[in-house]
Image (tube, rainbow, N blue to C red; front, side, top):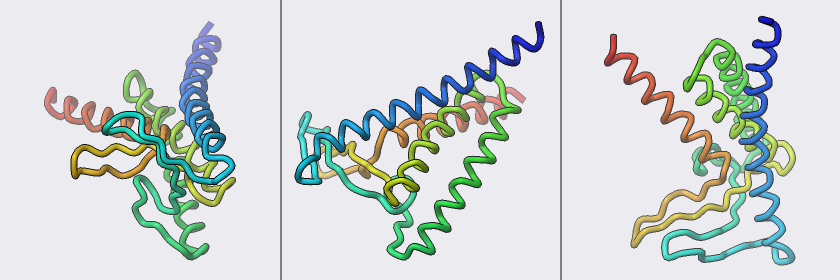
Length: 162
């Protein structure tokens, strides 16, 4: 009986990671199809939300972009190591904390896939309000950000309760 509970928890964990990864892959596939044959995409959906295809060589929101392969590969290796640590942390976590880690893992795997397959991460969600223009990002970044914010909030409430 205990074996089935562990199997079900692992299956649920895998399913969460897969859903995040799959939603990221599908969104990027659609964007790539919409960008054909020109290889670029500029679609205004609303006054503040646009689809704008860019290729990001850095980390989240285009930070630390590098032109040299050595630094790009080093950064990719660092991201893989950090993702591996988060996978390890997720095994020890429970409840909402575990779900937060799983969202981060699924999003990270989506961006790692891009880094390895395309040598760059496909970003396309563009938000701007008046003169404020946010970084262009993707679905994986959304899940990573939600996971990180949830972990911060959970940590804050742990400290407040103690």
